[in-house]
Image 1 (cartoon, rainbow, N blue to C red):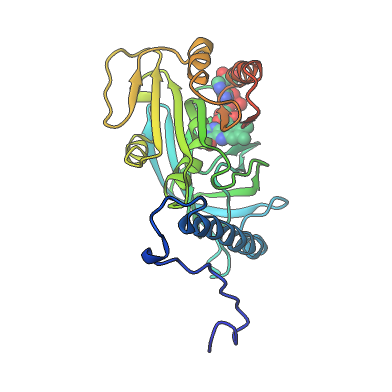
Image 2: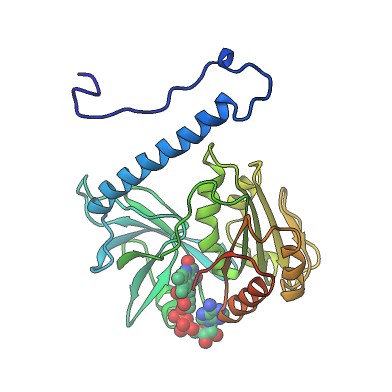
Length: 295
Ligand SMILES: Cc1cc2nc3c(=O)[nH]c(=O)nc-3n(C[C@H](O)[C@H](O)[C@H](O)COP(=O)(O)OP(=O)(O)OC[C@H]3O[C@@H](n4cnc5c(N)ncnc54)[C@H](O)[C@@H]3O)c2cc1C
């Protein structure tokens, strides 16, 4: 059966052959046109897929879904990774999330937001920072493999569209990296992306840095650059990653912003309330038009 007979319309723009380009630097070149058409086609395909997947989503914003803990591992000195599988074994139940969206997890008497750092059709992986006197933290510390958790979502109005900015500057501290990592990961793996990412994150020391291996992998991509600011450490090294021994403060952020255009750069901010407020104030002061604070 052909795609037309099956009711499918495969209208992918045909790729020009090498000989279609005269090599005289035409504006627009046939390959530039093809790239634009392909982007539009991909977006329409993605939107259609989104609608289908949202109907089937195992997660719901208005009711809890059951997950079973599959694995708990140490991520760094004060963070753990928690991997969860859908409790349902139904083939049709799949998880649908956009990068940097969060979910709400019922943890004993409290329900707290967490941002999945990665996911598949049937599982999600969380990075959870454990606070010594935290209500949710104290419950999470006692969780074991095979325990059940109730989760609802996804939430978060932030939506990213391919190639809508020349640069994305991600400014975060501590577990705020959980909101940045999935977006960075999806952008660098997208062959049609021209956007460059600068991820700048502050931590206390190198032993407080989670996602070391993941950041190293991202740094292999042409469009990813990462700088870690360590406030209490003077000697640390990480291949592919810039390390600066200093607190990520307002003056440093002002300096970083000076290298970017306020029109073509998207700034993403995620940290403590105090960090978010300080950075947002600087971003507004410097008249950057595009920014989002994850809070
Ligand atoms: C949209 C969103 C997404 C989030 N995603 C993640 C995530 O992926 N991973 C993650 O670990 N956390 C994430 N958080 C934070 C998380 O929801 C909890 O608030 C946090 O883990 C603390 O919960 P708790 O109950 O253990 O501590 P609480 O009982 O709320 O607080 C206990 C003490 O811990 C300290 N503390 C708590 N939160 C902070 C903070 N943000 N900064 C500094 N000190 C603090 C304070 O000293 C506080 O008095 C997210 C928050 C939001 C709003």
